[in-house]
Length: 498
Image (cartoon, rainbow, N blue to C red; front, side, top):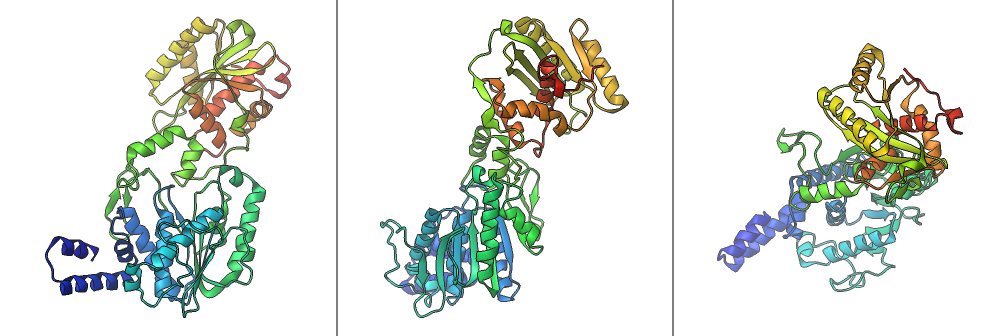
């Protein structure tokens, strides 16, 4: 219907016709949340995913009317408009049900004040008055477009009605305040807070003991957030409420996506979520800037344990250049070959040296997806380059389990004839094998030479052991074990030499 308004402006309709068109658009906005958004925001950028979310929210409202106490978890990338969508929904519900009490909570008081101002401006606008003439706020509440939000703005009451909008912070005071519709917008501030079990516990306790105990019998709630951690409030809500509906949108599709109701193709693998607002080039630039765990959490709604866990990446010191090879007591290159060709597996080779004063320095990293012949050529070429630059370098190759792993290792060793190359038949799981190496990282004793590979290397360590890939950590742990052998660190290392 909003298209009628635009066409009405383009054509020469009479004032009576324009008034009728305006009234029809307002009437549709009263019944349809998606129509309401378009009517209230004529210049709004539109995309398929916004229509999908609007449809989900419309269903959420219908379920509230049926007394189903709906619960919705909305996950979407930053700066894609999810907060604006839900704040518009708060305004729409205020018009539909002006006797309902709404509470909005976030980690930040600033976000609450922003939401409060959004609600004030919407409810005091002429367009809103046409759609919902019975929902009116006091003139004392109104914030003009030019005015700055007040820090103490946390309550809007509807004139002549029982309903209100209140904003607060997670862990803020809401005792005695009932609610019919609750919104949680990012209960966790960021990576550092999410990595703390105590902070996660505090946020969840506030939700269970303060927020959820304020609900009326028919109340529903929406939580929208960035998933920083598997055990964050979103993860806990999924476990606590079997009837919770989770809708999750990745910034870049990892597979073709279809509308579950109509079967319509929404986007293909590799396409952005909201190209009208955030292009693929923009998202790829963000991905290059972030570590893998941050990208997966922030943009792909795939939370993985990171930062401050087994490998605190802030403990790695970055060197502008490598020491001279005379300063090293031992240098090794350790290869973790992809177990199968294809399937997204990587072959990784970490070159690490132990200095004479006991430091461990990662000098070079090679990591590629490749087929067998290319892999064997690369391993041999790397051995030649290592010898040229570093002199006496020992090459180790991890032996994969089974007869196939043994045969693959024998082919690689034969290919490295003339080099000091050995096989390593490992035992135990990857996490256990990485523990001695992790202890040295935690002790500030593992350094990296500045290079392009640093970001992928740090990203995988940050996500370990919950990340998708473990080849760089496995290769680095193997290189550390061989470098440490024969030193003061050898007591905690077991060598398995073919």
